[in-house]
Image (cartoon, rainbow, N blue to C red; front, top):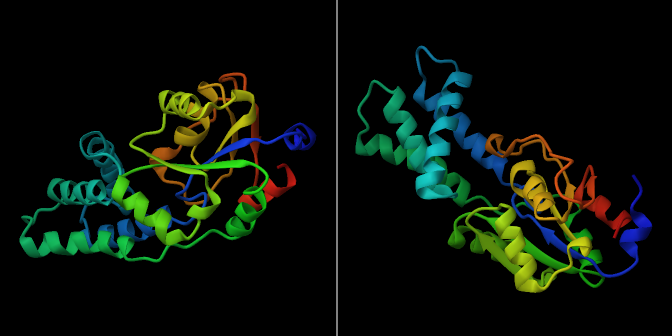
Length: 238
């Protein structure tokens, strides 16, 4: 559908996701997981089978540890303990921790077209960065990205759900019909924003974390839903 004209008629509030929307993120976790599976070298389970166990363990770790590298490391350790016939020695634990360190040490890699698009949107609309995860880790990434000046506010939340989005509407005095959540995750960015009565723009990413996969519920709420192939395409609509 074409929403160019209605959107351009007036200032909008754009709530913008960070990981895998503004900068690359999950690709580094996927590399670490591949290295972990190779390191584990399970004799009976296929790599896909090991990944299935890790996914289950990660879900449990999110409940107890939240999101972030500490939770990821804990999931790797628990998966090793569940599947390996070897005891978890200090040396093996250090190796597992090393997989996470490679993620933490990687430079923030801005996705193509993002900086130019933020520069275009910044004087025209109100931009608020909304990311979930460990507060310290996400704060560091925001600072290292160099993108913070484009945003009027940065919100780092432990989870993204309809209640959180409703809270942001109240906090900033936003109008539902003029507010859009933009991101790559159906589970965290699109469905809960729609459920909160906001508009949403889905920008798929080939490396979206498997635990963020979910069918988009197009019938939720009364807001508009758009899908764009890249962040840069926002300039055509806003």
